[in-house]
Length: 319
Image 1 (cartoon, rainbow, N blue to C red):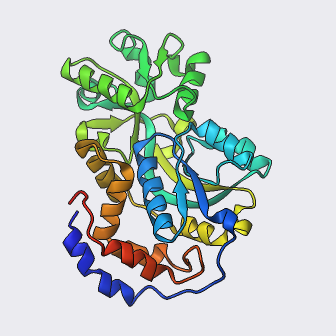
Image 2: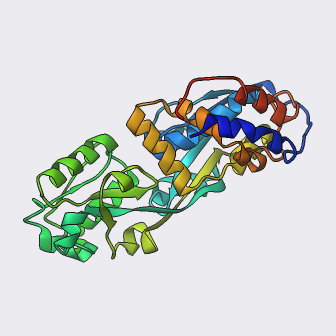
Image 3: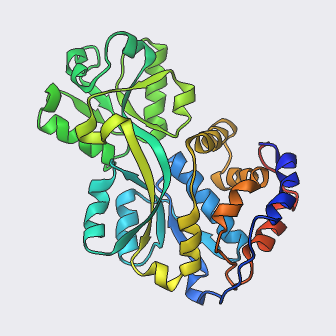
């Protein structure tokens, strides 16, 4: 990321961001609590939101929680927002809270994502292309599928297929692990030329790290065409109580290339997501015109001067 090139674009951006003045938000809106689920893609989105909120005079608090705890905490008013509600993979987890009105879908912040079972290139070339091929490879796979943390929505779908012996998966076990634990297993099996089936998704650096393929035939579980989107969610009433924060969160839209790039920097350089987000904002101020549209600082002043003051200040970060 070229910070110098980004800074030179700030002057042009001044002509496109329309100043907005409004009443200051209530003191209770000063701290914005956004759940982070421990996935790198969610850390990127949350990091950008948190950096912008801090620049606007808020204090962003980003507790690390499971998705289920995030929703329970939003229902009870302890969390304000979550930017990682995957569709269709996460619909079962969020459905009860949408049904009872305790959560509200705000906007889609990422389109054209992928989330389904995947295999490395060598396994693909051996003939494992579709969900229906998994059972045929059972012995070579050790009757194992590798997933994410316990309770993950993708795990639930795979476990359901195993429990009901759908597609002949009744003999299989799901090994649950952290993201990094699962990917380490993928790397070991690739190095050892062993076939493996694992939970894959994009955006994520795994798509650059591995030659990998997403399996067909999983539409009933993960949606058609490996498709997925990621949505921003707020707790009920938050848009009325804190409309300015809500406007910012609703404005945030990301892209696959952008998230892949930031996630790669986090993984390769072992940097904190917020440090990477801050450097990216300095290098890409053109994104701010749409993100800050209709948004003010916490005390009701125009957003752009406050953000610009932070972006032009020298600070270390990835380049």
